[in-house]
Structures are given as C-alpha cells and as structure tokens.
Length: 187
Image (cartoon, rainbow, N blue to C red):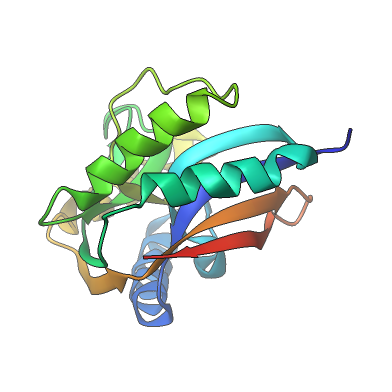
C-alpha cells in the first residue's frame, strides 16, 4: 500500500498571494533568520492528514463532500499578523484568515468528525485560521524582523470568496514542498 503526504486546504487567489509576497519582501529586507514560504505554496490548511494510504483517497473525498453539505460559498478576509506560539518566542509567522460567518469553523468541525471514522485523529488544539508565511530558522537573527512584523499589525491582503476545498498531495524536496491537488470539492 503506497502512502502519500496529504492535507485539506483552501487555495488563496493570486491577487492576495501577490500582496503577501510584497509583505514578505519587506520583512526579508529587515533581517535574516526566517525561511519564507514561497507565495505559490501559501494556503489555508483545514486539516493536515499526514501519511495517507492512497487507497483512502476516494473515502476522504466523500468525507470532505459530507463536511460541506449545506455550506455555501463564503468570504475570508486575509489580515493581521502574528506568530506561534507567540511573538516573543516565534516558530511560525502567520497572517490571519477570518470569516465573518462561522462557515469555516463549521467545515473544520465536520471534517474532524467525519475523518475520524477513517482513522484520522482530531486535533487537540482549537482551530486557528491562518496562512503560514514564514518559519523561524535562527532565533538569534530575527529581532529586527520581529520589530517590522509588529509594525504590520494592521496588514490587510484583501478578501476572497471560498469556492472550493481541495485535498492536496505534498511532496517534500530540498528546495521546498511541491503541492498537487488530488481532489477539488466545489461549494
């Protein structure tokens, strides 16, 4: 049984990726110590599945479809900046992804419940909608970058309509991950 690395996500439109890319360039100029996510790879992860038996792909597709029954297209605003676990000891730099309605939260809750039947454990942490834009590589070199991040607290990359959710394959390579959509579930 071949296994592949997978996750469920919402893709981000090009215009918003361009705004994020401009933001990343400004932060790169502020200093080193952070590995920046390529703009083409920025997405909103709903559920990381990890190592997945390829034979489960059709079943996962069905569970995603079950999770979006009754969910209409909705808006997400990409704004705000933060870090996990926090800005004092960051490991991940993120931009917020907020939905005025709770449709995003409803989808995530349904995914967690529906995928548990297939053996995927639910998250222990509360879902926090975000776009990972950087990962800290060296804490000793990030002070100037963090000061710049704080100055972008009002950052707003725009709003987009969520039209589909995707099951994505992730191939890890030394130059970075390569993402390939396996299934697209239209809302």
